[in-house]
Length: 459
Image (cartoon, rainbow, N blue to C red; front, top):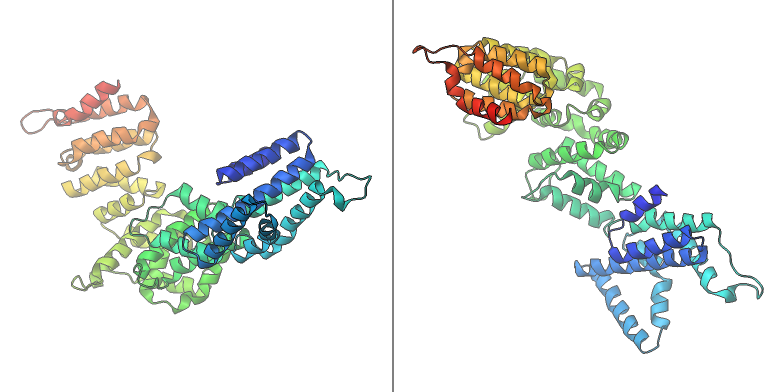
């Protein structure tokens, strides 16, 4: 029961949802004929409302249908019902025409229409018979209508792809998980859903042109984020979509391949579908990557530096390290400050040892400050023991506790470790106590007055 009620809750049109609620109540009460009639009423209401919506969106064919519908509705007011009956008789064909249902779904929906007619037209039966649909039939028709039509948006096929591209290429694009999954996954039919996966995968991997809407690499960056989110619903479908895109991966330039790696290198479906020869090529490309070879006067320099930064941070992914060991080798060769920038860009448990080491061993204020910011970025990975170790390293290194941004960073770290509860107050208190005196015999903890006030306010 909960499954059907959940589907009913996904019906966006309130008028249709009310009709489906009626059908569900009739079914629950054992009034199966009325349930089937309500299901068919919901179907024809849903189809007509969706086509009218398409007309309002500027669809010419839909506008023609709307005009005919309005004329038929006016005729009905004059007791002429043949026009409205004609429209109803072809509504399923109209739904297929406007891509509201798949062709294979027509048989199941037409069965609902057929049984509805058997319920309301007694003349279709012998004189002494009344059609008695079973509860299983009524429930099946309700579920059919919900899964094949009523829970889906009025856009399918080409129309939906246009909306999808518009969403991703919008100058004010925001990756809203509920909106994306509801609009472009959960309410779509399987075939359309698969096509959305393929569009996202091909753009993310191959940097396909976007007809001037957005630079291809920027669109690819967004599509990669979309694909990862879609994959959280169905990784196998993401793997199938990536496999189709990989057919052209070998033809990309070196920088395009590296950008694709930066976008999707932490995803299993990327590595599972990457051809072996391209795996080896990526290893060589990463191994040969050297920022010193980038001409800072080149117009593309900024983009190349961003790509390098993302690739350095990719080492935080266990998936990427296992598949591309050269990433860890390159990371270990970085300076402490470069490591901290990589850690801050893409926080992961992998970076915690490097962060703690840099807090202890930083040789200048800039490196100390970068380690503190990296620690804040990794706050969610800390337990009390790790927090204590980090603050001991911080208070034991004058290049950390004496950095200009250190007092504010300490307060930020306190708030970022809220998941540790009140127990962390004592740990931060021990940190303040451990701070030494400065050259004028002034306790350094006085420079951390904001932290002391925060501890007192939370104590």
